[in-house]
Image 1 (cartoon, helix red, strand yellow):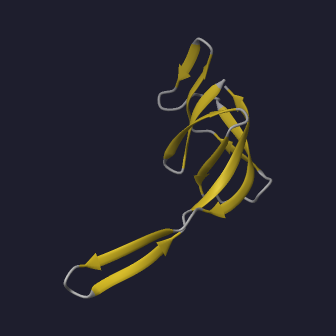
Image 2 (cartoon, one colour):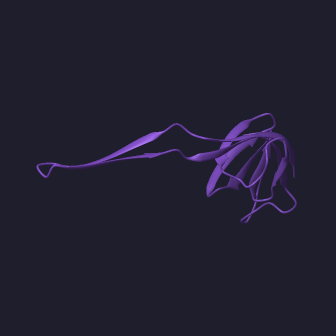
Image 3 (cartoon, rainbow, N blue to C red):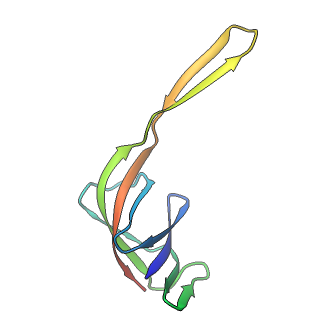
Length: 103
């Protein structure tokens, strides 16, 4: 069984046991999180597609950890002007293990 969920403005196709890296959620590690924006639920031979969401469908996951991604170095350079600027960015994420799909 699989489901398509929406979190952080992105869509994820998940199954039980999958680990996803979603945009940072305001939850603590080792807590439970429920996704009620389920766009589709499917198993062998049958798929339920919502308009826009499937009624009564809930995907449950366990928060493994909150963290930051690898550092991205952003360099802006203007040729022949002697001007340059360096920035760094680390995107925060929440690591979630999917435990149940109901719907």
